Image 1 (cartoon, one colour):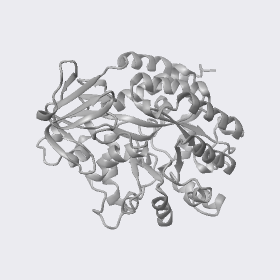
Image 2 (tube, rainbow, N blue to C red):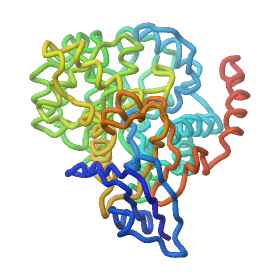
Image 3 (cartoon, rainbow, N blue to C red):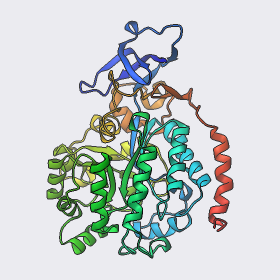
Image 4 (cartoon, one colour):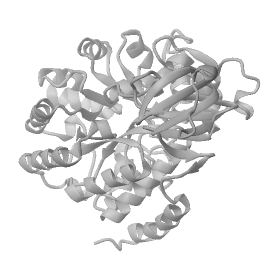
Length: 451
């Protein structure tokens, strides 16, 4: 089957960063087959034709870090430190039946799809990790059509410093968690089809070295990625120094875990030697500026990472520490905050750099199958209307996308050739029904009606 998205302003986000006026993109069997002027790309009578006239046509965004289950805690706290926030949010949602997980995924998917996110890394938490919970998340992402990497959250340290949650008052078996991950990989790891299983230690300071070493072994054995939080706030940096006698990044280096298969969410409190290690090893960073600001965790050193050519993608974090899953909001804050941290007030990254973090870098984080409009990559394409206020007058498409585009909604989204948003409407599931289900299920969560 073929899909042709025609007549838009095409931003390829390839290495040349081409802009094609009145351009088209053709997708055949889920992969991009042609990109160029509309006059050169014709639709046959059997093709699906999507008219993107008046739209910016570009690769879909990658949300490099979120927690789907947190959507149940949206708006339930005001600003507070991370440790107090964890105690306020997670006791109610740490052990949920499959129906709650499915609805949570579809809730965040509706918001992400309509704001241009086509791929996501879900650092998926249920404590302890359960195979039926992972299955529910995988099934929901397949239902909505998104590319999803499910990072199964793992931990085995008893109540890390400063946190008191009922689900963390006993030690979880390293062996049992490893076996669960192996089974999940066997059952659902299918990157070519848009579903990946990732190993997701909650954070190094919430795991023993035994667990982290097993994670490294499984990553090598099965060729899967690892995703974890690192130094989200100052207290975690200080705890690492106390516990390891060095920084978290240096400890991960000692364990042999740094490298292109590892991505670190936050890294708000890393120092120059840490950043040098990340650059030398090709380790990825996922920047979550909105969540960092909401929890008062700090401003990540994105300028230093960018100067060292560390791969940086963007994330929203969870909907309880952000209240939104709109990556365009994260893009704007990511562009603005470095000037508050750096002595060189207007240093890089530029707006174009930030846009690349949300697209091409996010695609490379997930294996390089998408993130640009180029022949041979997955056909993940969005069309954003240019006729509204954020883009009028249109002076620079990248700056206006980043600085003015936060309220933009996509008109069309196509994932691997599947038309998942049509004229602003999600096509893969009944969005209004999911909203009604969420209101009903919420009552059961917060009135202790879940066994």
